[in-house]
Length: 214
Image (cartoon, rainbow, N blue to C red; front, side, top):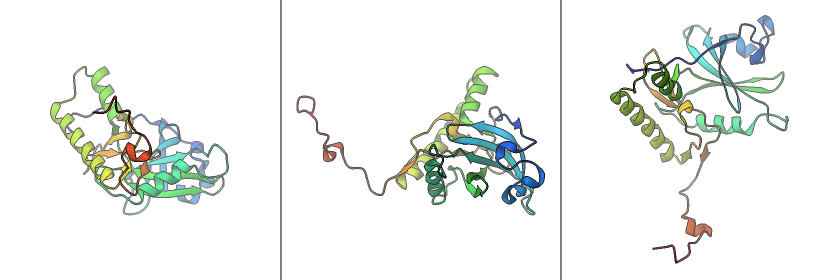
């Protein structure tokens, strides 16, 4: 981008317990293909960890692993997780986060989603310029970020997907590599898909009083 913000913080996670696998040979089989670096985020629906792949041909690639919390009823996978998986498996766009893999830890039925890792998010970029460098973001960077964001939203809306939780922390920006500076819309846990155009309010029984309608 040429005018980037701060990298998201990593909390050390050497024992890997928080990822549901424990250390060493107690790791689930799927987790053994990653080196866990540490926790990078926590939200309403779960935790996010930074990992690097160990598979030949892709060794060292940074991956973000999102662990979903158990459903409130404690009876299985969260509906939020299922919704996010279903949506992300159906869509592909340069400005939408890419779902790399889905893993289940059968010991406790916890669910993990693996994504391409983005070093920055818009919230961190804004805070970096406000608190650390004390000057506004370069206007060309703002235009680039905004254009890419609208490009991603246009793709989603063209496919009848409404994100419903768009905020700076859910707008990721790739760091080093071929996609440096590329915006990725993330976190589709609250997203909804509509199979047809929404009806006008008047057709849904929501009329308007003639006094206020012109």
